[in-house]
Image (cartoon, rainbow, N blue to C red; front, side, top):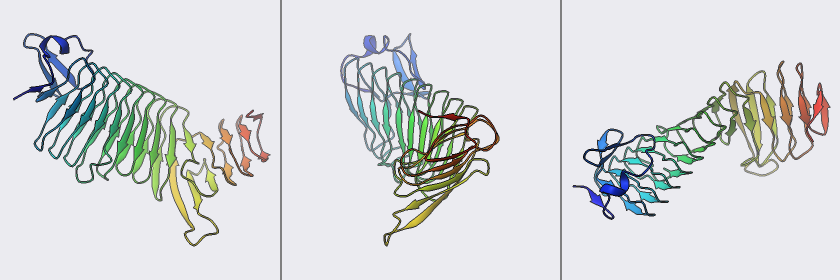
Length: 283
């Protein structure tokens, strides 16, 4: 049985179709990822809440709030800026045309697949088995487990546990945990540090290795180590960083702190208190 928040047969047909969404114009039956919808939104800003079973939820044209429950749900965002929250099941979530927020931070038990849509989306993955894909927009992917894949846009991927793969755009890859693996894509990608760092970093872009200090000078001090490939640029912490470039052209920004950068070969742009092999300065 399909639950609707209003008369939908004429409204849904006018809604732009996001990734994963399909509509049979003859019967006006909405579907998501090839499955007939059980809950369908309207052109207004709806709140769509799933059941304990396996739901197929299709948003309408408004800025909707969609909440999955315990079942293995399939969810498609609509044309508005939707907020989609997963839960305990093994969910498949597709962002719509708007700037959506897909939050699976409550989905501790499920292994989920999350896709950003054409808009500038923010996506949160939670468990080790989660796989998150950026869409066509400038997406931000935050991983507390799993694997993140950038899309065609200039995406940002932050990883506390798991792996990140840049897409075809100029992406920013941020490790904020130990043992993180980052893989840049065809674009000019940047190793981004600073957001969760509590100490300086030492990074070698050519070798693909890095380490950040955590809480130096305290009883909780430690070191986070990470590896990466295909990363050309560096954006440092607010502390003292030491960074080595590659043989190609790099942009090396120490950010705050008393930093030292080594541009090596190539036409490098740098910002640091101590600079070697830098042809240009970042203003």
